[in-house]
Image (tube, rainbow, N blue to C red; front, top):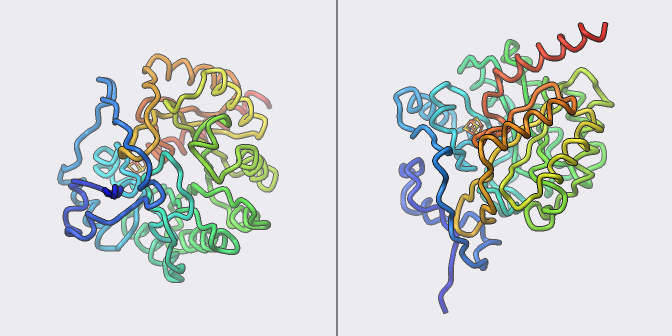
Length: 332
Ligand code: SF4
């Protein structure tokens, strides 16, 4: 009997980690799934190949400080561009996720215990890097009683104390069945609270099993209720088989929750064991989504094939602030 395992093959960014790391099973729950052919990318999906000296410098800092980045763990296509600009998204609470999204390349399994020193060394690294804006995300930690809420809050507080000039954006799990967790995170007052819906509700069972669409909408709405000064943000991937009308309904749902910023990007299949790409959305269709979303009242929308929720996050934070001020001016 042939046993098929899901490995991260031939990733040049992991070459330094040796053969054992290369052969590590990243998605044991997907090992039994049939292979899905990876569709050829259209011409409009072109990324800058990683490898410039500035990219190498960022990579060296990340390795030196033993930071985990979602840029690497998720195999983000923008890594060449972002790391050249010294922009990375840091992942706290380990590199192993307790959920198993059909779209996601982050390793799944049982994570290690939390590292109590992590909030301080992440904050020290951000201070050393001199970042004006930082995005902090995490794996899902359903194994923890509070889903990791206190660890998020400690990280935000450490950043405020050690890197006071840096604005803080967090991209959180859904804290499903973790009563009181959201309140702990919001009380630490991040500048931007991002939680991604990932896809339309009809695709949740296949794409985001274990999550609940209306719970995620309510989570975002609750952030605004608790602290209206925090910008809220959410993102989806398209190309997973969703209908256009479903995307428009999702926009309405997010606006009902008073979400400020919507990101829409093309889903790309990380390995043959992941959900297949059901279609490539054209740049013109992305522009149309952006126009409709702006008309629905979002302060900011980013909708392009390579949009990812943390892509250009620093520049977008400045645009968010300007858009809020402009809206306040016109309503005065
Ligand atoms: S878009 Fe986000 S995850 Fe991707 S490389 Fe840039 S900072 Fe990292």
